[in-house]
Length: 192
Image 1 (tube, one colour):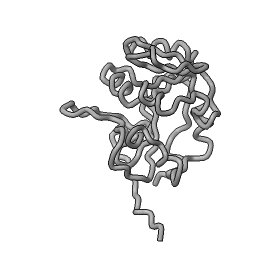
Image 2 (cartoon, helix red, strand yellow):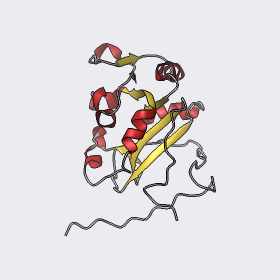
Image 3 (tube, helix red, strand yellow):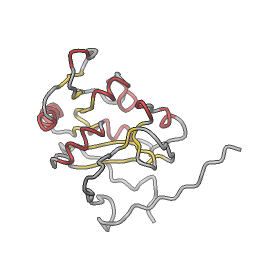
Image 4 (cartoon, one colour):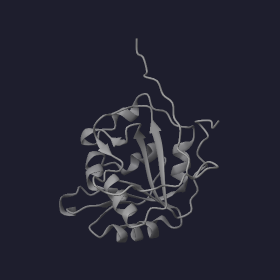
């Protein structure tokens, strides 16, 4: 039996392109209009996890919608991480400038090249479902790190939305059987 608090190996700074999210059990990484309040209450993470990611992240690549909803580069990992943030957008001319943030209008592969160079040997974290999907299609994602939160949102921004597309097979990195399903068990939280 795997302990839920230690089921992931420690993160390493290996120059990976890392698609990283906390996700609801039903596959949403944000609520409608990019709301994140569901993560602020009733969701906890393994102690030290944010510090682990802060130490191994060299740069962050995100999308414009997420940036517009949360335009604070200093809040990444609770402020424990500081570094270059790249926001990929089709319309940089109306973006609000921010210290440490570069707005890119290039192809996603070029954005990864720029981000990895800025990461200087550490990981480039991708904080965008849309960009992550495009990078996955091009074979540019090295690893997907997900933290499944004990909540069902029912609506919002999905991690992976690809209607009519083919399934993308993944390989489990933590465990003996790389094709194994990950088992989680929850019960509805009662407030009464």
